[in-house]
Every structure is written in structure tokens, then in C-alpha cells.
Image 1 (cartoon, rainbow, N blue to C red):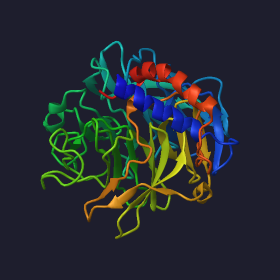
Image 2: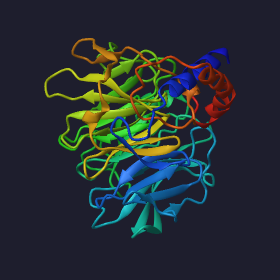
Image 3: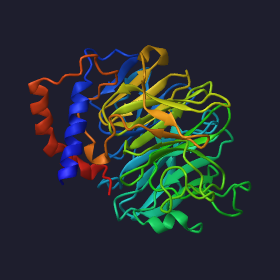
Length: 407
């Protein structure tokens, strides 16, 4: 409890210190404020943004910069305790010809996490079809939930190990895996193991999947227990180590992360830019990171903005990057307007990078406070009022831990 209080205080003060003078600084445009815990974003080819709300079961639509009053769909039986809820959304490349919207949620009636697809008719839903049923959500934690379509039209699904680490190394178990399935839920013939949806194993609890549009590479963000949060380049059939290995430098059997933070940052959603040169990912501790992907060179990670608790990062059809926090959605049109970045990583050889841990916090420091997606002001001194407010927030932050806990 003492450690949780300390982390909560640090996070509260970081959020207060980074509060911007105005909403449109640092290249960010507020699209939606006062949002109801958006968890995941996906875009239709025409530019409409579909997003999920964790605790309401609603799928909402933003069209032409405006939130539509009526939800696209409402899932009728979503459980919402801890890390359960309406967690993921993806739209396939052929949506214009075959308009299905895919969502990942914790079903209160059947007791399992599952993926379904919802037929779109304009801005409203019609039919709902099951795609794949996954693990029971009874433990409340490590449900995974992110979805992403590959450039070949196959669907990637991140599945946590349901707080049972042994599942992650069992190739016959769906827990602790990245799955690759066809849009109707069947197993692609070219998967690493014939007849199995498992694409990669040794995954603990992933909140982020994204695809490089130029190479087709799949990237994943990974939450460790109390050390070594990771950003991974997923290899077909690769074993990413959990629970036997954390971070880089382990047995050759395991794939090292591209990026590893010894101090937890709680990485969440990610997106790769249209030209494939940069990966953006958020943290629930309140940072937006930029990871350069130069061909043949060592990637470099930099913090480019301080925000509220980031839940997802997504690329729109016009190439802009959108950032969802626990209470708002922002659009970042010009990455160059973010200003001077803060380096957070140093090389550890050819296998990857190790984070320096600047501003790193655990998930217990998650906050519902208003987001501030801008670089922190040059004067980082806290006023007495800010300190008092930070102390008051501790109690609320500790209670909020149950919504997205780290156990």
C-alpha cells in the first residue's frame, strides 16, 4: 500500500506539472473531451473514427470531427471489473466492400473474453457474429484485448494469460499469446503451426498491437510485473519469454524485446506512421513515446509529450496520429510540432534498447485526471496548490487501481 501511494503521488504530480497553457499546443488538436474511458480506436477508410468505451459497452463514432449522438453499437452483456470490459476494436482493410467492425470484450453471460464482428450499415450496427471465444475473465486481470489487421487481411488478437503464467508457455493454450486468425475466425493455412491460431507465445499482458503499413511487421507492447515493460517486434512462431524471461539477454530460445524499461511505464496502444519510419506508443503513466525505425540502424526511443493516462494510439487514413486517454481523444497532425524530445533509451547492442525510466510509473498510478498532451513547460516547479491537489488525488488514484490493476 505504501509503494502504491508513492507511485500514485508521483503520477499525480507529473500530470499536474505537465498541464498545458492551452489545448492546442505541441501539435495536438482536441477532438473529444469528457470521454467515457475510451480504450481503443480504429478507422474506416472514409476517415470515421470508431472507438470502444471500457465500461459502457458502447462503440462510438466520430465523423468529421464530431461525436455522433447515437452509438454505433451497444454490447449488452459486458462485465467491467478491473481490466475487463470492452477492450479492443479493429476494422479490416476491405471494410468499404465488406463493412464489419471487430471488437474484443469480456462477456458477462458466458464468462469468457471473446471477439465478435458487427455489421455496419452506415453509422449503425446490424448483425453480430461470433469470431472466437477466448479465456475466462474470472481473475479480472491480464485479459489482453487489442486487435489489429495485417496488411494481408488476417486478424491479430492479443490474449493475456489470465493471471496464470504457465499458460504463456503452453503452445496448446490460448493464454499469453498473439493469435492470427482469418476474418471469420478460422486458422490461416500459413500460420507457424498447422491448425493452430497461435502466432507468438510467451506474452504476459499486452495492451497494444500495431502493423507497419510498409513492411507488414507486427509490433506489440508488453506489460511486465514490476520490471521490464517491453516493445516487441513479433516474429511468427516467436517465444517472447514470459514467465521464464523478462527483458533482454536471456536464452537464445527467447526473442529479445526491441525496447525494455527496467522501471515500469505501462505501455498501451501503438501506431506506425504511414511511411513506416516511426512507431508511436503511449503509457498509462502519461507519456507519448516516439520510436524511430531507421532501416539498418538501431531504433531510438524518445518521449515527445506528457499526457493523461494513454489508452490507445492509432493512425488515421490521412496519416495523422490520434491519441486516446482515459478521458479524451486528440489528433496529432504534425509530429514535427511536438518540439524537442526527451531521450529515454540507450543502446545495449544489436539486440535492443533499455529504457532509462524517466517518469516511469506502475499501473497503480493510473489517473483519470484531465489529459495534457503537450511537452511539459520549461518551469517544472510545482506550486503549493498543485502539491495539495496531488495529495488529495492519492485516495482516488488508489481506488482507481481496480479499473486497470497491475497484480
